[in-house]
Length: 123
Image 1: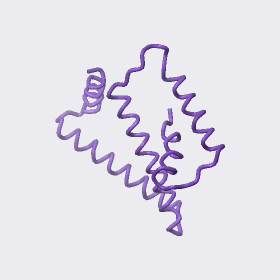
Image 2: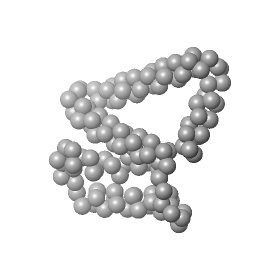
Image 3: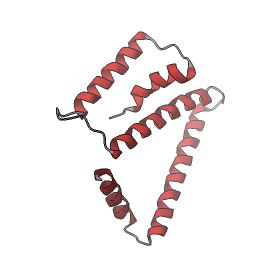
Image 4: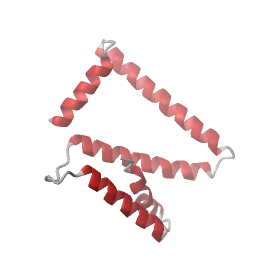
């Protein structure tokens, strides 16, 4: 649920010392409350491994946004920098997928990977 947008102002303030405007803080709080209302169904609050991975991914994405913002100020072609970043991430993800497929020795590696992830998140 785009948790990364809630982390961006927090990280910008805590890690980079940026001044964050009151409307930005209010928007982040409103977004967090909305996400919480969607995520919690009235039962006991419990985090599972998948929740922790989602939070870690959102934190990483927020840091990527802040670092890309900083890096784009230092180059003439910020769109090119963003495109290069996207290409590198795509190539690395493709390489990871290829390696996983070879190591699993199966053309159906995607199904096996997703089954393992689903099993691990319920354990």
